[in-house]
Length: 85
Image 1: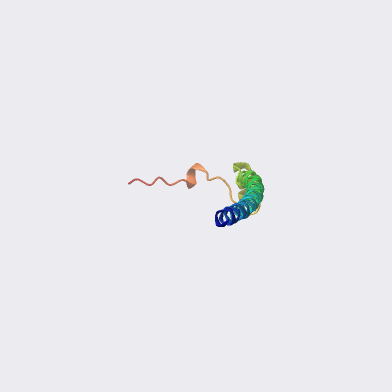
Image 2: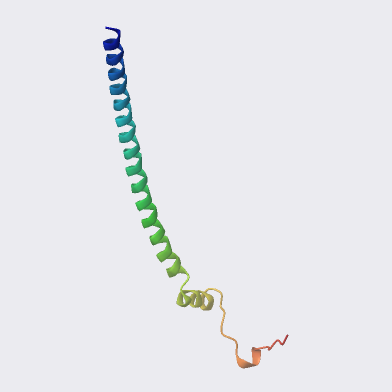
């Protein structure tokens, strides 16, 4: 009689542990899905920012801004100074 009660108790407790483990697995999988979605979004944003950076740092754009906004120009041969070490 006591053995049957003990067995029922262990069966009941193992079934509760199985339910808790299954729930934890589902919560962890949901968290994993959210993190993978965020990773995808961050990678997409990073790629967009790299493209934007390369556009802003292009030599043609820098030269155009230097000539038009900063009124810079290329030095002539008479304005060059050779520095020797």
